[in-house]
Amino acid sequence: MRKNLTRLFVAILVCCAMLFTSCKPHKEMLPTVQRIQERGVLLVGTTGDYRPLSYFEADSTYCGFEIDMAEAIARQLGVSVVFVPTSWPTLTADVLADPQTFDLAVSGITITEDRLKIMAMSDGYLANGKTILCRVEDTTRFRSLEDIDKPEVRVMVNPGGLNERFAREHLIHATIIVHPNNEEIPGLVAQGEADVMITEITEAPWYVQNDPRLAAPLMAVPFTHSEIGVLMRKGQDDLLKVVNNMIRQMKEDGSLGRLKDKYGWQLLQECSFLRRPHRAQAGIPGSSSCSGGARHCLCCSCAQQCCQVCYAQ
Image (cartoon, rainbow, N blue to C red; front, side, top):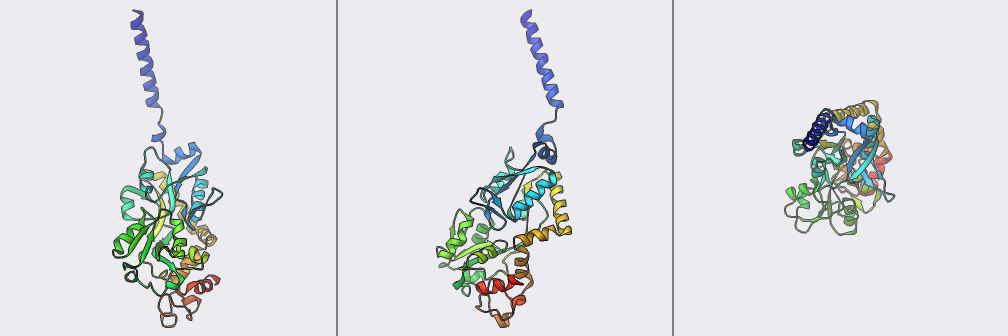
């Protein structure tokens, strides 16, 4: 009899516990923004290898345009921010991981149809496109994709991202070299370990400015046209709304422009897209002179001198 009563008592406790648990909202079922605010921390995935957007410094801190954007999102939510390392080969898997690895990701991530099929992305806030880095002495050698797509041309890319995909789709004859660290590739090109780096107009000018051995002769005529945005998993509509509202507000109040100025992007963008080459005067991309003047130069195609003129305006 006592044994049966004990079993009954345990059963009642289990039922009560199940009832209480079912009435208590699970953390996973809370709206994303509420869950982040209760946690007190916004978890942001980033590769840290994409200057000047996201880079990992020697003092173990993250810096860059996108890092500032992530910190602005965290302030908007009233929380702090913690950066979680990810990589280009694992980015999609990390976004879709269960349990979640982070709430959103920033690293100069291009908005693409493939990504939008399985993930969510914010409105764009930086124009982007594929281009190349090469040595200054090779600026006249590489005037088009056809000039690059030759067996003797060594093209270096980082693995798993759109740069590698672009190279494999469009450079079927060139010798493609995959290097694991994106940030090291410009230096390897400058040293002669490769001839060309497939990169983007958001990062190429930074390396041209900071390494006089490098040039980006096709900056003004990128191979593709796209935008960069914040990446996150689907179903986080409340967080996506917060991010898009912040981007819209930053565009309207000028803070996005000021952030671009901080990292030199505004000048780079103007130089790349608004100032067209005076081809009759400056010649083909890669010309050693820029007689068309700063407002008509082809950014980075007249080697370092032309860029310095553009940036000085």
